[in-house]
Image (tube, rainbow, N blue to C red; front, side, top):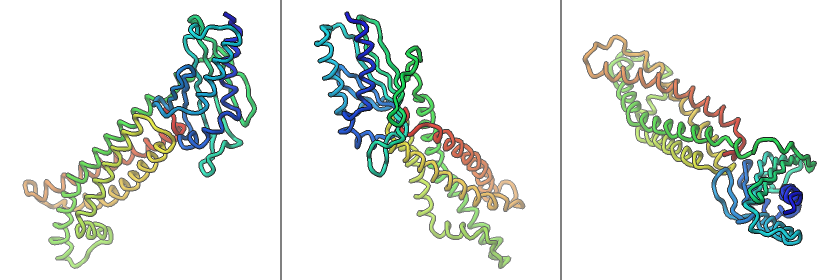
Length: 309
């Protein structure tokens, strides 16, 4: 077997991906966003961030060239154990036009296995300038932040469940305490503090507020599932927007609960109002803590390339 040829083939697989043969797939890759693309050259199977996607035109071109080159160099196809191209794409496509941008940044790894021995080329393409990276470098496939993504997705599902619990437990207690304060304290004194305005609206439209938080919780659970199983840049952006909206809602609710929780200090122990106030106090602390976790989640997901697995 012409071993040097296999090494050359691993290079050409990387080089072809950066050429004009990628043009038919530009729209598709732009939709997927930044991330890690894996192509099984022999079978044509394509995966993006560990999730199988519809086959790309470039996979057909790669296989066609590889088969022709093997035949031309009298290398039996059955001696090739596998041929794979892995591409880490960063800022390679314009969202508005769907075209390959001038500031593309590809890190490609072509591997051809012949008679059980792998031949690898790692190629870096920045703005069309290609450089061969040290072939002894570790495989890019081991660098995918799948564990981080899974943890964030599962944690977001837990936070979604928390917000569903808030709509079921916290809001009824807060509404009850607001009604008690308005009827027994503020109404008698004839003075309603400014901070009570949002609660006056909320108690007048309890179903709207409750359904809103239920929807937020369900959205966090759903986006957490999609983020965990994988997805392209679109899912990544949805995740960011969902967490950002949860941060805003958490901040608003925490700010509204805090003055409410400080009221009713003279309520005697053993009466229903006392238990309601205790629930509100615990919920206020929980919402503030969840706000910190949400901000941390947003900070972590910002560090993950869009679409990274």
